[in-house]
Image 1 (cartoon, rainbow, N blue to C red):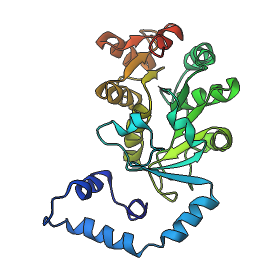
Image 2: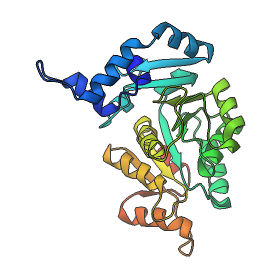
Image 3: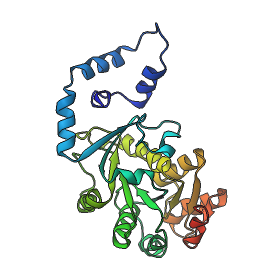
Image 4: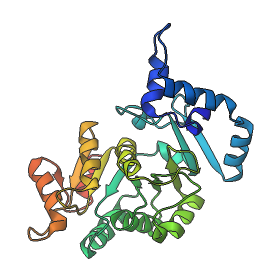
Amino acid sequence: MTLSYAGVTIGEYHQLKYMRHGHSLPAELQRKLAAAKRLNSSAIKSHLASQGITWITIGDERYPRLLAEIHDPPYILYAKGDWQLLHKRALGIVGSRKASRYTQESLKAIIPELKNLSIVSGLAYGADEAAHRLCLSHGIPTIGVLAFGHDVHYPKSTTGLRSEMEMHHLTISEYPPDTPPEKWRFIARNRIIAGLSEGVLVTEAEERSGSLITLDMAMNENRNTYCLPGNITSGLSKGTNLRIQEGAEIVLSADDILKDFH
């Protein structure tokens, strides 16, 4: 846990884990290890407890099995809410931040049928927000994956939604609580959404979209990939239609997803 607070990255963590005896560490990593030793772990644990945040390392039995199997799993997760949702079978749902009414209406038809699954998304504006809100409305467990620490939030529009999820569902982050949002962290967050899920559904996505990165990550990890078909004249459907053409499964109803979760 102190390694995380000292800024040790996943790559550096693996360097430490697999370093051969007698090999010297890079100067930057040595600096971080020295900083970790100076940290007051009791004070950190006290702050996490005061915020209701649980920390789960990759060797812990509470760490989600599917996530541990991906190429670069986070070595620590900070969780707020019901961490046991990490062990429920999950579907990732992502889509455009500019999602149209089509995303909302489609998810209204699909999500209520997914009673035995939890839904993983990124608490972003647009499709993510729609998926999480519909889960809350229909009593479907949902997990929000943050691209920053638990002491900060972005965007403002999902602040209230996140609070409700942390009371009854779950949010997780691989970063210490005071970590601010940065563009690269949103991309890194996508691998966790894909890694927690047995499959990922994209509702709408432009040809170059972060949602499609999540779908590609899911495909690379041997997970099921699903897309809603869209209007061929809509830029928001160009990405999903192309992925269907390339082999992602077309979703016309919840049954197209549930057949893979027997």
